[in-house]
Image (cartoon, rainbow, N blue to C red):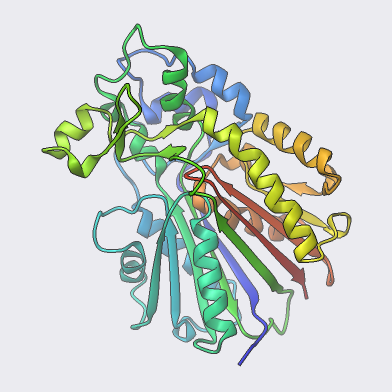
Length: 376
């Protein structure tokens, strides 16, 4: 059996009020009781104006990742034409769940309180939501299920409280090492999104037919680029947090801090561009015919690099057709693409026949994902 699959509803959950740049440190705190040396610079680079945090200014958590994902799913179900009881498959994605064990999908299912169902958990970085999405798509297309949901949630702010950085930032530390730890602290934020998929389109309103989903890892070529759970010595050797004598010792050695290697990141751009050009040929994709281009990028400056590179390929989607939620919602990691499509549907009057192309590069260890949707 080979059936068409449709996104029939989307949902979102953004915790708390929008937090402007000048109020960020009230939520994530100050490292060593002073302002970040790089905070203002990073904010100029990423272009983000507001974001959401699932905690109060004094560090009290208002939500868990699983709670936010469940709220996004309930939002999608409330906008759908079906009863929640029809849902029989749940795929959940996140960079890091609330618990080490069990899986994130179990936590989300428990929060939902719906009937017993098949689940799947996906843990990566930004592209993990596309892994969950493709899992649901294939389950429905092959006839295993008629209705499923893909969700993703991020609670990045918990990693940015000062306690995670205790003893790490020293006066003599060089700027590149500081940037590895500071960039994500001023860029990532919290939120959750969900897409409901069915084997039939909506009867009373628009749906999005899934044409294809393409995802590829290039981890055979790269070391970890965006990572947590390991430290690296002067020789470049890595030691996982679980190989230390205690979690406390691992934390003291910086093995739990979220970091970004910028040298590796910029080396990934040509790999992502090459994959895109191969996809254009393999899928007979016409960039000029794309009506809405959802490009996930973590910084306005990185968007500029992306535009320059794609322009050189001759396969550029006109920049006027690009859509993003980065500047108002921040970088919500795995949830970003789900929230982006939700906002596109809320703000734009999409017409039947229009096509939506999604592009999700993941710097974790170099993953890239694309999807093509058609409005019906």
